[in-house]
Length: 233
Length: 384
Ligand SMILES: Nc1ncnc2c1ncn2[C@@H]1O[C@H](COP(=O)(O)OP(=O)(O)O)[C@@H](O)[C@H]1O
Ligand SMILES: [Mg+2]
Image 1 (cartoon, protein in one colour):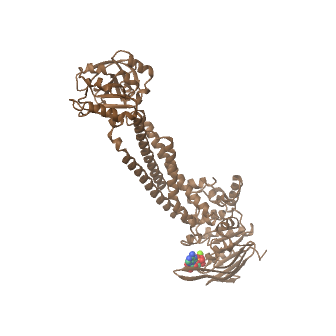
Image 2 (tube, chains in turn yellow, orange):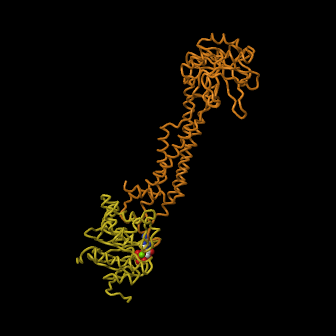
């Protein structure tokens, strides 16, 4: 396992301006996530977990600091470079799955592949593979409205992995699910980590979800605190 | 191309809203094409009648079909320089055969006039015109619409009665007037109608064939001066003026029509823009997710614009072709000859569809730009 590896944050700070007031959300964050790691990020609401995840995904820019993801300092990329970088390198999973309601499960999963040069056949194979991994190949033709919340989230996971990114960033993926669906989703993430060697950074409130991770980090008042075994147990 | 399905599905996402937008654009473009067609038909007609080498002499103080120009004037008019030929005309309304049918307007002319009086007469086959000129006086050319209405055939003898006057005409149909105003008329010989009406000694109008357009003012003032102090004064007009006076005030009408077309399109843009903005507001989170998947601003912009342009083009196509088929099917006409048929020409169709695309583009621009610019994190944070 290459601990130097996948994600490395150096002195990352993030400020927001709110009503002419400077809000220091993240301060001097140092973080290193190695290839194949499965890290849970916990912390109270408003502590900056989503902000941190967004920075790593290149969705937001840090105020200061460097964000290295697979040998690229993404803080230096412009918006269109980031867009194409994101589509190959990271899969993002949201609390609310945000599937396109007028597209079938298959078509939703296909979306990231439409951005790449790829034959239709190749595309279709990859979509079906991703749907098979999340256990929904039978539901390929279904619209999101015909799926349960847990199934929708699994389609969203298929969409996140279809372009075969090495890194998966998940922002409270079980936050909107019942216990059973949440367990399914966590088992799926665990499998993606163990069988498919994905590097996973999971933001969660839920200690049960965090328990699937091999390492848990806590974000408190803008700073990271590492805890090896969960304090919630 | 890969995104066509995506675009189409999004268009039909809110079926009711899209349908309403679609109909709005279709109606706008129908109106645009219809108005443009009316304008160009009027223009064509004016242009044609401006080209025509025909003047009409009327009794200045009479209303249509009352009074008339005394036949005694004919020889004097014929001598006016520039007058090449003339036709004395009498009109009579023919009683419909069955109740509720439209009366038939019947025109009698000097037979030779069939060759030059009106453009639409040229559409009558030459042999039928010759038959009208050469055979005896009791022949008729009958408009197609009249033929169809009564089931008459060329070669048939028919008997018709004048309305309001005691006169019966028995004529042989020697030909058919296929189009133009006379397609709804019966054409007879002047001599015959004059006799049937008991030789009134007048013509309701006299049509002059003249040598050139330049001579119009000279000829008309010469004629009208000649009869200034006679019992019946004349009024000599161009065909255009004789047919309709409103044509002369056509300029402002053109402007009004253009402005109406423009306003129709503007209203369509604002309605469409609103519909698209509404739809985009509902979809902002989805758009943010697309961007998080790697959709660039430019792609988001073009997808949304494609959506609005596609919807508008579909509506515009329906509306434009609707106008085309409407006028083609109903054969709406000014009834002033072959150039007065309302036809949406292909150029108007093309312009109509181009305008629809413009409507789509303009109305999609602001919402698409907003969507392309929206910040992923801010948009998604609002809920999460
Ligand atoms: N774009 C923004 N503008 C202003 N404040 C923001 C913005 N994004 C996040 N914040 C603030 O930063 C803090 C951390 O937010 P977030 O990262 O969403 O927290 P968490 O995900 O841990 O609940 C919150 O106080 C939030 O209000
Ligand atoms: Mg959050």
